Length: 564
Image 1 (tube, helix red, strand yellow):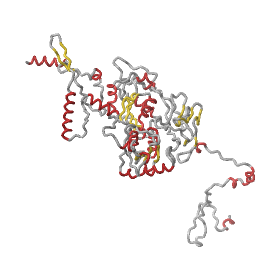
Image 2: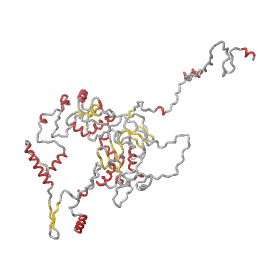
Image 3: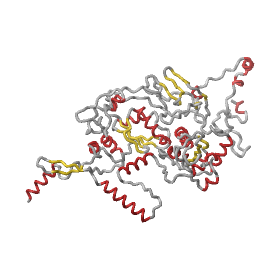
Image 4: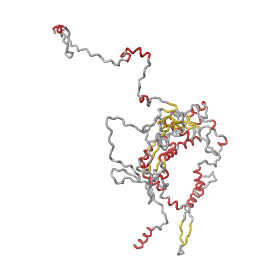
């Protein structure tokens, strides 16, 4: 210890302060910091220097990575060209490329499943944006480990919902349930094996009105948007049919361009019947013998599959045009006025008819789509290309520019319409081949262009003496007023004149009554069948018999005689 004590600046306990002479330094010096930890671990070559010469001769082994980390995500550019046929299979579960796009075949399924049944283009896809996976749950899925034992099964047995034997209406905690029907008095619902048996007898007009009226101003509905009628909506519609006989489907946006296709798909996939349609609103009837317990049950899609890659809609050289002509049409289309402006989430039921009518006067047609998503107005352009038909030229500046094509034929072959060009279109003549000829410009003043429906109405008005053809065209105001007064007099006389029939009774007295040939028994039976689409409460009926012939009138007469 004498030797240790003789040493200078030694400290046997690191936790105690240094015993250095305080007179040598005026300030306190803290102990030095510990050795810093390296930021990165040493490489394998530094750890095992003896094996450096072996790594040069032997091949390097790549580390095994998890296959889940190799899957592409939304930010990766995955593209795989595909051809028609099966692209992936897992036993009986296959993914097929066909005329309906990407479809999924499951064992025992009544039809091929798709993400959207109504908005699938009629063109075969050329590629996919993600690996071919089934968006459904696998047939056997083991329970993932959660750190706890699985829960015991509930001893309470929940009965299946049966539409033929629903819970009573007054039961607490039970929602409103409509019985199957409507059925005639004395009949009961029966189990149906196919669509015709479930629908039952065709609905009468008054039955349709009775079913539709409660849903007119009700917001309990299925909303159908840009994706159209998707696969998971099948189960959603059956959940509506569980409580009510009619499911209200409101369509907005892209699907409303072709409502006939939407209605056809709804009836085919759900098995119901469309009993009423107004604009983009469809009323789907479940059937007289519908039972929720025996409904078809389909697996749900767990995620939305990526849309496949389709051929480009806009070609640099469209069909029927040269590159110079296509460029000239696109330049002229910039100064062309659009025929309409499409709003977001609108109802475009009359868009196809408007485009066809516009092609009667111009070879180029433009539609303005401000605020719409690019995918939306591209889908609208693809639908117009099939339905009109036409050739798409451009989607620039949120506008759809179309050309009617070489093979276009006018609907008015006998009397073609002459375009009345505006000031902006007179400067830029659209197509030199569309100039009206001299024979077309000279039109007959007596010819009138109208639709077949208006011609039939005019013929009916002439037959009923409610309209008269004026052969003299150059009439003054006074002469024209006289003609109008004569027409009013003849039309009123024809309207209030009926054929009379005289019948003799047993006493020899004659009774006169008016018989209207136009009003048959079916007319009176259908009076109650009319229903107001606007939901008005006015349910007044016309008198069925002559005045004073009802039993109530006889009672009133007897009371009056007693009072006298």
